[in-house]
Image (cartoon, rainbow, N blue to C red; front, side, top):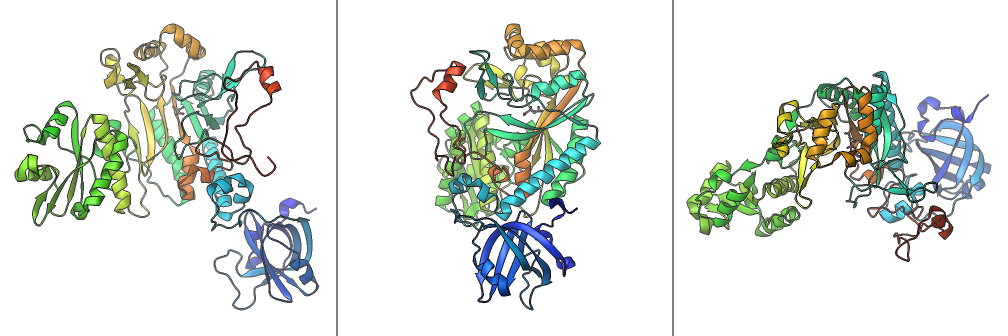
Length: 596
Ligand code: ASP
């Protein structure tokens, strides 16, 4: 018996099938009428096949419109002399149609279903099912599937078990805002959607699973930046009786199998860099090391330099710069534009120094004098023709601003070598982060991340200086994933919560079940989570994670296809015992067209 599963895909037929009688199904892409002869391209998810309607089938071919669904059968033959299309996988063959069945007629779509499209993203998201028919979108879906299944196979081979964890759960301390779901049965009580399966994967270690993974949907109700989604997918991993080295080895071996799917061939082992070094050299905890423009220290040039701005900044904060080789040719307008890059970080502006054949130049020349300007340029090892850009202020501001400036200059000046990819591990993150507004420390990763053993004795006396056993894996300046070795000693967990200002009652209330579990034999454990959307976007060479998600939301968290989030019936609210405060529901953009 032949079943649908043995039917060939349009894009798979080739010269090897010449003379074969086949049946194919798919969508009409376009039709060309040559009078007495009709050519039509047929599309399915694998590619495109040319159909020819001749003789008494011409009339049937004439009836076809774009996006009609058809089933055809006929014989595969070579295209006529000079008709081959080298851009198509099936470009040397065509199907001479003998039978055709129109399975569904299509109305004229709101945009042409082709890779080259002028349709706006709004329109594409509203009619996402048509957008996904476009070959480049379909190939992203295929790549996403390949990536996930390669990761699954790899982890399975190493004895990892895929375990599903609840979606309706309790708020987890991942640090973002939760999505909440009111309970009908327990009036007044709410579930939270998981920001990550963090606590469950740790509980699975207590349970003895030992090696866990999950392709897990995570939910964070954050203000969306351009490339964030309220729900996203992590490859979530946790294992027992391991150290950092085991995690590094695992991910390096995993990427050796996965990254080639996107044409990236990683080295066997990746360099490691401490958080501190990454910040000081690159102004970022996910440094893009594919190009230079490293930050240089200039604080030591400032005392007594004669320029009050720099003297004061050095005394209370930091003064650092970057040298743009050959940058002395930048115009006044370009230099002024740099201020816009650093402003979002709280920097007042960028102070520039130039060395040209005519001498040195800088707006600071009046205060510093010729010699003073030359001294800064020398300190930064700037040669003739180079430009030194200096930012001063609080450390956070200076490092962040120069990190952004570095990336912006590299993009503008095309300093990133084509085809180069750099992977590295960033390690030794600070355990805690001081929050000025709340006057307390927060966990930089989460409260279950273990401190470095050698820093343990400073957890109470100087908590800000303690480093964590946390790590991020970074590709070309993009954080692909991160995790940590966890605290598995109840006494240390108590001290950590103390440093966070979380008292016992609060701890019991929020994640008492985890602390309780740790009393019954907890193995040492750790893990990490990879951002699957970002990983696939990089492999697919796409800028936006929306392009590798089947049904993404807009940057304002609406689904243009379904119209979610939407107002619900009063009866549903009544059942849940809810009353909306403001008299009106959400007003998402778009209206959920297409029969939604
Ligand atoms: N749960 C963490 C996160 O979502 C990852 C980890 O620590 O494994 O960032």
